[in-house]
Length: 399
Image (cartoon, rainbow, N blue to C red; front, side, top):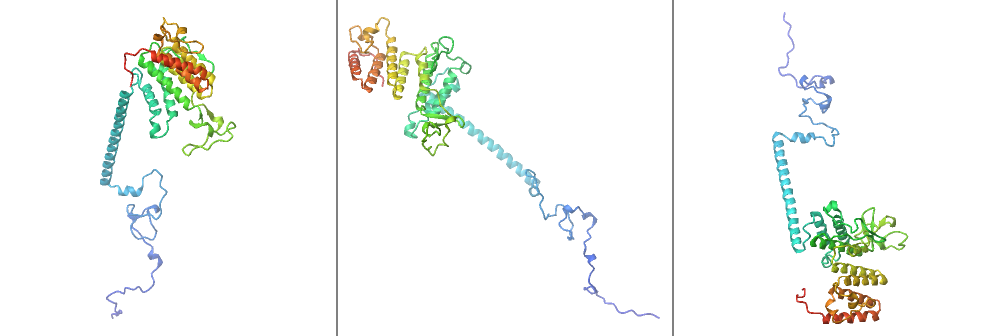
């Protein structure tokens, strides 16, 4: 006898007859998707966890110079090739641009140097750096700067002239420097070394050497009221220095840095007489060159309120001019040795030189400045008579 079973539903019910067990909700990934916990986002994700599909929920501290993983994903094979090409092009054109810029700067400097050499030549027997320092000194001391920028940079001008002078007096730098008259350096107490013997040099060499020395002296005159801060290598006016010798310092201008301390300051350059006496005690200079150096030194002494020393220097200038008179002429018959008045006799008129007229005129001007009219007026009158009776020069006057 057959037992009839209860009829079963043809379509199974979609709703379970009982609540599902919690154990059946735990995902069981397949074996090929099982990875370490580092690559997993969460434990409850049923999706396969592959390294190139994972999005980590936290960021590891990457090294500062290490590669970025996000950037590495973006740099595909095509992108890497494109980036390499662009980097190569950028490097090539940057190098070409800087090369052309450097060559253009060299060409521009060469053109400026050539134009300046044609306008104001420098001795051809000097080397490149000595001529460069001389051109730099000329540029910084150019009076035209007073009209353009309102001041002259005497600090840089003096530095350039001193560098040129150091090379000219150093046989190792210039190749053949001037030699001392006595075979060694002659020191003048309170001044420094005496002048050198440059008699065997060419005229352009001697003229350039004189220009460098006079440039150093002129820069030293303008830097007389300045000090050099040795800690910062900067030049400041003396009235801004902080120290016992300046109890009421002036505030520094806005363009300057902080005022220096007195214990850190020194003179920015040697005094002017150091350079003037190199010309006066040296050999190989012309009478006119020595006369100009003597008058410039005397003028500086007048500026420093030293009238007696200035008068001695003016008399020294007159003696320099007398020393260049012809051998056949007697100096006492031309110039009074006490009053320095020119004697106008038939024999003396032809022996009076322009240097002697220039020196005696400067001495008379010095007497007039200091109120000594009795000594100045006779000299002025004798110079005037000498100029009026002087023979006419066959050469035209310089313009």
